[in-house]
Image (cartoon, rainbow, N blue to C red; front, top):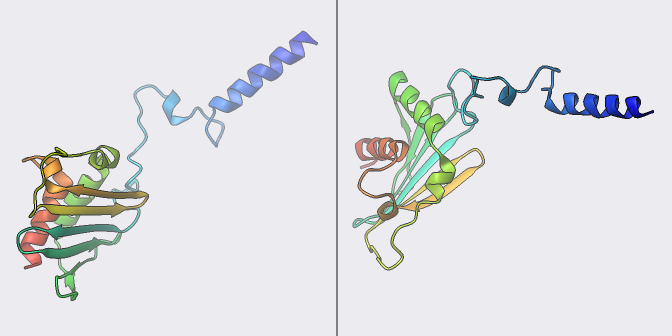
Length: 159
């Protein structure tokens, strides 16, 4: 009887450690890491990426939308939707930056609560399950690479 209980316990532990196909899970393979959850194996986006920049001295309200297939649009202050032509290299760079971004860390960025910046930009970044709103002053002088790149796209195309 004792032997049967031990075998059932061992079998249960073995099943719990196995992946869906019965092989060890990714976490059990030394030296292997699972790919980033925010990109497909081919590096493409898994969902729409939306970046909104509001505020500043001029009171801008710009929105950039990048679809998984690489098509992009900008919504201007006037509410006009304009298609945006980005090079394949530029789209690839944005995809890499999305995959490399720690959205939880970005969401945790907070500035000095005692300092109010009236003409601060507020950034909204939505991608898959991530919905991040952060003030420019909370990010410091060196912006996270994804926000810096998205700002550069808006600077070039939204004015």
